[in-house]
Length: 206
Image 1 (cartoon, rainbow, N blue to C red):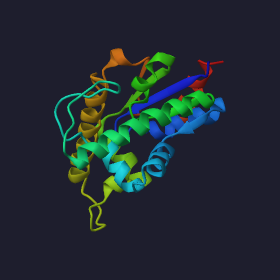
Image 2 (image 1 turned 60 degrees about the horizontal axis):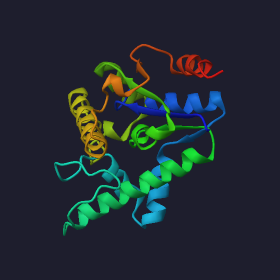
Image 3 (image 1 turned 90 degrees about the vertical axis):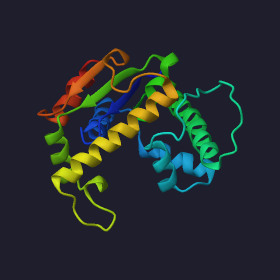
Image 4 (image 1 turned 30 degrees about the vertical axis):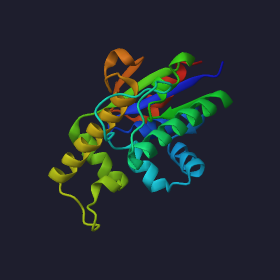
């Protein structure tokens, strides 16, 4: 069985960088935005549109799980959202079946639950998340016109992203995003060196 590590993360916590460094240390495949690109390829939707779907809360308020029957709804946005999740589900399972891998976000911990992945959740305090967004030039740090957000605006944006991620996760899994009982390791990256932390986690698998 392949070694699978999934990473859930608060926005700006460094979870993506941690995942990439961990994959490098373990010589494992790394999947993040590659999943969005593959969904776009299979659905003929733009990557930007797919990203908007997977980073925003669903448009209805009750959970629909893969394989569960439901009444058809005449709503093209709903249909596209379901199609994207179905493709995401298939792609993540295919990727996990190829080799050892690290998968960031996108409900991978739940989708691959039968494969018993090592599940990590990464979080940090707000000030360090704001600082990381500034350092990396995250899109969330800019307004639509390109102007740089104030710290207050950026905090609001970070909170909005997290809220949408939580709603998306809860909608498709029926579980609470960030709930410690759903993970094998919860990591506070507020004042840690991500490279050293990834190396330390990698040693768990030696």
